[in-house]
Image (cartoon, rainbow over all chains, first blue to last red; front, top):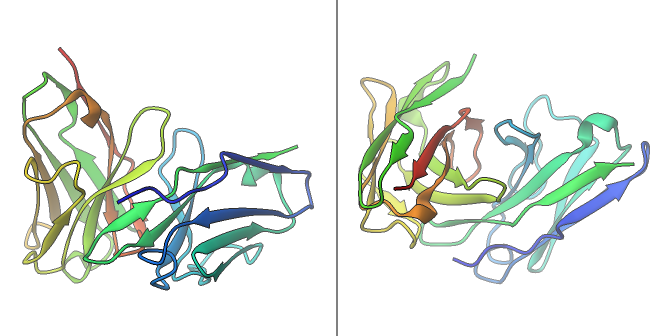
Length: 110
Length: 116
C-alpha cells in the first residue's frame, strides 16, 4: 500500500491551465479505472471533483478534467480562478478492496 | 442535504481506546459502502478502512489492521470506528466518507490526539 506519487506543488496565473500528475503502478492506477481526485481548501473537508478517471460529479465545473495513461493519471484545471487555490489529492483502487491516496499537490494561483 | 457528522474524537493516552461515530442523513445510508480516511496534522490523506453496505465485509489498511474495527448500524444510519491500542502515529483528523471507491460524501472530521 505505497502512496501514489504527486508533485508537491504546482502553480499558474489566472486563466491559465495547470496539470497535476498522479503516478502509481499496474496494481493500482494502471490496473483499474477507479482513479478519483479531491480538492481540499485549508481547514475544510476534501471534496470529490473527479471519479472513475474522468467523470465529474454534478455541480463540478467542466474546468476540471481527468485522464489516465498507463500507470499515471492526470488532473487538469483549465481557466484557473483564485478559488482554485487548494490542495489536490488523487486516489486509486488498489485491488483486494484496498485504496491508496497520493501525497497531495498544493496548487497556487499566482 | 447530505450530512455526515463525526463524533467521539479527543485526547487519549498511548495504548488507549476510542470509538468514533458518524451520523448520516440526506441519503440512503444502507445503500452506500462507507469508509474512514484520516489526515495527520499538516499531512496528506490516508485511507483507513471500508465496509460494504450490509456490513458483512470489511477491509483495513495494514497500519491499523488488528487494532481498528469498522462497523455500521443501518437502522440508526450510523458508522463506527473502534480504535484500540492507539499509538502516537494515529493522531489525525478522522473523516467519515460515503461511497466506494470514490468518496462522494465527506464529513467535517473528528480530531484524535494520542499523547501522554
